[in-house]
Length: 511
Image 1 (spheres, rainbow, N blue to C red):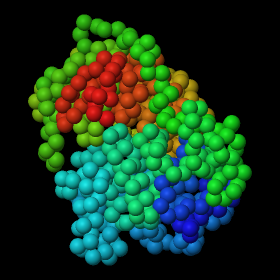
Image 2: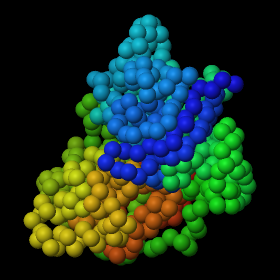
Image 3: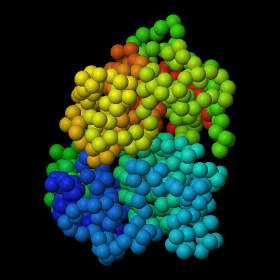
Image 4: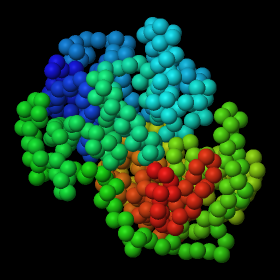
């Protein structure tokens, strides 16, 4: 079968850094393949994806020794517009790919730019909306979409270009489990029936493990395995050579791979920690909360709950259920239409977000939206500086939090140069360093690999045991079941279930 894409990368390095990000990469891709690209954070997966999409070196400055050929053409000799409609790419920040007034216009923009006939454009948009579960969202703006809905919209906008190769670099990170499984099944079917090729970077392989035809594993900038996974109980790799290139790779005994990273969580009830302390009065009290977005009509409806000091609470639900909308009421980013929100004895509606920041540390879905400074150390210390804390105390507190989150080795690095999972830890450090009694964290580990994910949740659990209260949005049921004292399940703007310890979570959430 004729190759769709060939990569022969001897070395890739970014300007200003002599270290190789990629080296000795030799890969061939064929029509109809559904491929999972995996490896620990910092192993070079994103850099490889950007090379295969032509973003490096066409758009991002880097030194590339070698070549990437698409349908026999060297990508370095092409311009990005020439690849539109041929290669689709979704990266860590899909919201940057949505810029039109409505979702329908965003989905139509690509094929219109390729001079596709109007009737065909309209048909592609309708099919994309159905394919990604967005029917009825045509006139919505990206600002009114949830994080998971934004990712589905970006996927749909790439799909309408009808590319031969679709590269998805953590494009599913904030998509709920049910939708994740559904879209992966549809993409695999598309590969089988239409000869499309999908390269997927994803940390939740349970959704598509049975669909993957080929797995590529990276470590320290090179490919250590290329083939089909032997899904034995040990989850080890069973081949030593790549089926396409014949290059000798790392032996199976030295490469271990979990089929599903969450399957290794010890989910027994005995492992769950009890809350640090239940006080007579709750630290968060929400009574009859109602809220409506004027642009979309989406609403929170009659939400009532109490959270006590030291509790670690998970908030789960499908995309668009209202999770992020709810937590934005806890620090004053949104104001209720009806009802009241009391946090640490304060009526939130009577205080600004700045005033609430001393009580509630808030981590947004997208850590890039919180980056303001050129070094990790400056970034983490900024909040303390605005509160006019003495520089010596700021330095001490920043060092303490960097050590706790294993970030001292990147303290002087620019946050944008970090792998996305590590950038999430930097944003979490900025949230934690304030010492606020309540931490509200929105998908804090969505871009992390298994060791980072587990370690970060252990730290949050320790913080909870020290008496601080945590509310966390997550789509990872293993996290909610193991680490959290309670789980709120949301659906269509309501809390439909309040589970102790996350028991029966899968049944309750419908995931």
